[in-house]
Each structure stands twice: as structure tokens, then as C-alpha cells.
Image 1 (cartoon, helix red, strand yellow):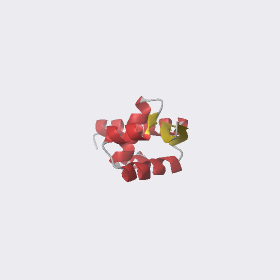
Image 2 (cartoon, rainbow, N blue to C red):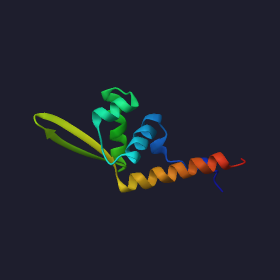
Image 3 (tube, rainbow, N blue to C red):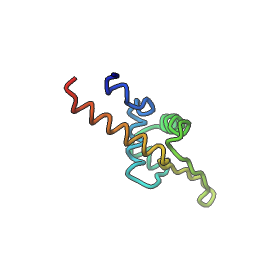
Image 4 (cartoon, one colour):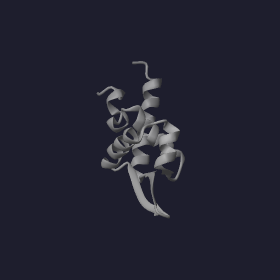
Amino acid sequence: MKHVIHQLNKAFDHRVRLGVMAVLMANDAVSFNDLKETLELTDGNLASHVSALEKVGYVLVSKQFVGKKPNTTYSASKEGKQAFQDHLSTLEKLLRSDN
């Protein structure tokens, strides 16, 4: 039987992706700038990690214009919410395990 650590979701291995999902789980939608400020990230760092989460279907991206300015917002997809909950449950199991 595999150790519980092998059940962790690799999509959340990096602290930035973990942070992005945590913020999105607590909010319906978050703008790029708010997410960047909350996690204290550069534009490029945030963009690359959100792109990785979008690629696996965990983050939904909405782009629109507010006046003449582009506005990008992110939200967790249904699959992303479930995957993150499963990841957190696995972390809890790991913390409780005697191994």
C-alpha cells in the first residue's frame, strides 16, 4: 500500500500554487492585481503559476475590459475545488499518521 504522501496532488507542490488556490477557495473571484498583492508576487511569477493551474483545469480565467483597461479575474473551478479539498485532506492524514 502506498504511503499517504504519494496521494498529494503535484499541482499544489509549489507554495505559490498552494497560495493561489487557498485565496481562490476563500473568494468567488479575485483580480490579477489583488491576487498578486495578497501573495506578494511579481506579474510573471503569478502568471506562470496560474497558467499551470489553468492548464490542469483547476482555475478559470475571465478577461474583460473595465473602461479601456483590461481586467483579468480568476476563480477556482469545480474540479479545482475538489482537488484542493482532497489535497488538504491528504495533508491532514499525513499529519495524523504515525509513519
